Amino acid sequence: MPREMPDPEACRVALERFVGDWEGQENLHPAPYNPKGGSAVGRSRNRFALGGFAVIALALVACTASGGAGSDRKRPPNFVIIYCDDLGYGDIGCFGSEVHRTPNIDRMAREGLMLTSFYVTSGVCTPSRSSLMTGCYPRRVNMHEITRGEWVLFPIALKGLAPDEVTIAEVLRERGYATACIGKWHLGDQLEFLPTRQGFDSYFGIPYSNDMGVKQRRPRANPPLPLLRNETVVEAPAEQTTLTRRYTEAAVRFLRENHDRPFFLYLPHTFPHNPVHASEAFAGKSANGTYGDSVEEIDWSTGQILDTLVELGIDEETLVLFTSDNGASNRFGGSNAPLRGHKGSTWEGGMRVPCVVRWPGSVTAGRSSSELVSTIDLLPTFALLAGAELPPDRKIDGRDVGGILLGVDGATTPHEAFFYYYKDQLQAVRSGRWKLHLPRMKGRGEAARLSAVELYDLHADLAETTNVAKAHPDVVARLEALANSAREDLGDRDRPGAGQRPAGLAAQAVPLTMSERGGLGASSATDQDRE
Image (cartoon, rainbow, N blue to C red; front, side):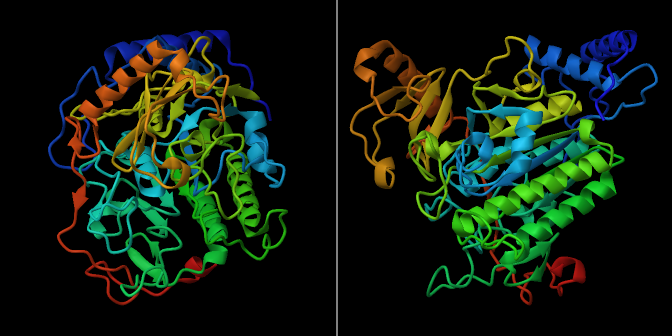
């Protein structure tokens, strides 16, 4: 049923109430910020670096949510993030795929917004996910590499996302949200790093990538791939063919159980990361092998989420964002077309990913934006929309992009520059239409060595085919200066950054198994886990 147009007088009152709340700060921030317990952090009027677009955007939401004189909608919006693993820019229909049937994600695009310049902060899992959780570049929170210099966390890792980092889940839970993580975590497999210790009320999923089972590394074998419910292993090895279906069923249960309160659902799918699996209902049904089967099952899962929101009558109160943790690999069947590069690279195909946002009645249907937006922007944007507080004691790299999402006239990216890191090395910087690749000595394949800078005009040359550095020395100089500012703040290679913070480090690492849990406890799988 279409939303009724709000009564003009009710809209005016809602706007005036919102502006008054904003100026006074008290109603937007009813309690001192204190996400992890302990001493409360003092209130600050400058927790949000807000421009006019942000205030206008929130005012529009306040007006829309008023619904009319008789409406009792006063709660903040719900948020759902659907986060695929290794899904490429060209892997869904609305972004050009001709081999994958994705009617539900395409429906999101028709009913919402396509972000065509949406970026993650790394070409691989762990660092990318650290940015989504914290709103920061991986180097800021020291999650760009692990202790052995590798790129992602492996089982029985000492390192993890620092417990004193403030996650998007903690920010929203402090505002009264129910929070759940369902799927692949990959930010630490020790007790203090698990989702239930990082702001999520509940967790169901695998703690790292699905290829990290007993056969991955010899002679030092990993434990069987564990499936966790909260902090307990309930299945090992996890039955991967049914993971997407079980994640979806758990997500739908969460929506039903929490539909009468604000909620944040984080659904990081295991697939289409290799080895790719799909349930019996989808196996062998796509035109692109097992990779396509898994993509089409994820599309089905997305449809189940959308249909449940409609059934529960909270469709117009829920912002759903669909995206991926990095680009597709250059193997296994994924596509980053029309971009150059792939998973693991700092070419566009490694870090520019598909993104669709749907929020009926608030996000205008059928719209597309090429403004630069990143996963680092989700934490501050969702916090602002929820009326939550950001921590005043640390730097967050993300900015509010509510104006872009809500279609405010003239809203543009808040980022003067966006930085592309490969492990510890700064390899590229984008500002506006220009992207400068820096000389580098690290990488694999075409991501490897560059002896001189290369400049690309992404508006005219999305595939990064024509180096125009010699024709634009002034642009090169300006972007090199921006790169130097990142080196000072975030660091580069062995040079530390002044704004870096330490990662978490466990005193001892123990495997997640059904029998030896290092104090986490063991359990047998329940019928709910197996279903």
